[in-house]
Image (cartoon, rainbow, N blue to C red; front, side, top):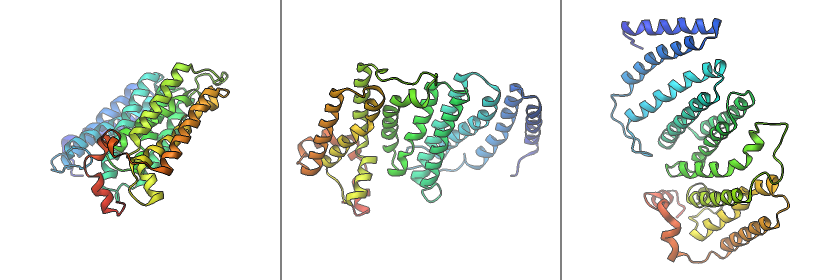
Length: 317
């Protein structure tokens, strides 16, 4: 690696602290190992990548910015194993895990959108699956609290939207959809008291209305990213706004089905809301009325940029 002599003591000290942690299981030894090892890794990243002049397309980030994010991910990756073994503080563990998940999401956004051949879709899906499993496992082991485990799982689930629509706009819309849908299952997947499962009616009606509103807003944001890609995969053409809006309305009862299953199984009003959404969505998809007058409102920021050019290049327009 061409490491100079003054960096060798840091590597040797890291090895010593790692051995001490292996035998004594002391947090100070592990933190010392992380500090000395990080210095060596940071030196390698700075000397190898920081001086290069390269701009990433998905986000206005240079290689220097990506290197800083990479160093944060490396540092949190080194901290995670030792903290989860010896640290009982769920808040600190959750903060480190969420920082690591956010850094991984940002790196995968840049790498998958810029270098699909080097960072393919199955790696994004694999890291998302591992992250969701890790959140559930650590919660069961008592290392994370329920809200932190839910947030961690929602982040890893949301970044999977990059597989369907690898653009910068897909990530916030997919995260918004994941964060709006998953709270309803928080008490089932991450129940702090397994002996007291979620009972029907445990969610208030006001919270249910807020939940449905957030899901509707998230689906509205997602219609030009993940939903549009899925519709184009089935229709092989550029879908109009009415078809996208109808697809979002059809997905609304599916996204909110947890309300009817776990919280309000006997609510006739909720069934009527779902029936209206299904009927209106099916009508919009079949009739496909002209919505040019509302295009500016319905299209939003997703129609800006080079979306149309990308579709034309692929033969969808």
